[in-house]
Length: 447
Ligand SMILES: [Mn+2]
Picture 1 (cartoon, rainbow, N blue to C red):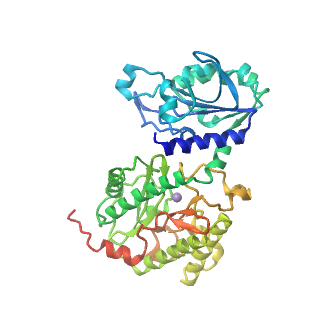
Picture 2 (cartoon, helix red, strand yellow):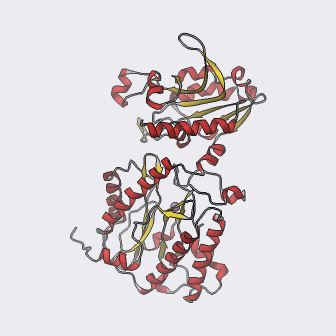
Picture 3 (cartoon, rainbow, N blue to C red):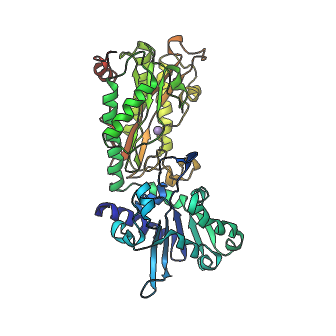
């Protein structure tokens, strides 16, 4: 791990320790392998909060933070420790099959975390006698309950004795507090999100040139994902939506297995992850390279909402205001076009909110503005959010002009809130009607 990354994760541990205070202890578990079927597992993915604090990608690990210090037995003298990483034991055979393990002796050097032990030593601390010395225990409880294998074995006695421990130490899920930290991104994180956005952007351009009527949604998906990986993206940020025609009206459409019909629009909501950070992009293209007049009308209304919202983003502005603004632009646009008779009905066609925070998670695990806690509704420098207005008309909406039924349009960008305004991290992504039509002119089905 390079110095910059060590310093980022170190600063997160320091800040989290400061927030929980000297009379608290925190235990943040990393993820374990998850079985897919028989003896096959899903590709391993670290828990994002654990990654945030450590940058460590091995399974079966846990981080203990004790801002007030705990005594740790050492080979020579006992030492006072503020941070301990529990990791897998070195094991020649396991490493031959599944890859290298860092080993606790190398943690300080590799990761910059002061102390480390084997994960089985965690048992010594997971009991009432030890934990009762603290006023609060912060643990990623929701994730802890999903641990499997060796880690599940290690935590089971703790869970069984929870009724003995809990009256003495207040047990708190750490996710909320970590979410308050993740709300504002550091320059290190912004670079990663920008990287993810750049990988996605390149892939969209390469894919745009190979869309034509008759191909399948999964053809488009595969070209995109080929280029994510080709450009160094290490995972998809979320299951992609590649939805032609009316499929675009299913917000979390999963199957991506229908043919692209001449004259339909194709909605693509797909993006790459990069070093655990997500981007989130949606574009809507005409399958045959040219928008119909009706499609163009709807597309321009959504594009206007997208742009008007982005224009307003700066520190101090409320996310809920941006949401209202998006609805207003969409409602006004449809009303002026004679499609919407009563602006109050806009939600029937706009369906979802204008955006969300992105970061380690695509829908970033930060406190929700919707709870009405104004701190998290007011945008701050370092927030990264999506702006993704959309309009959706299903085939059974009899009140909508026939030519528009079976159409969904969404345009989504990733926006960094800067000191004086904002920066569109996906500004290189094509989104004007004429640009899209020009870029798709050369497409043909000989590919
Ligand atoms: Mn999104």
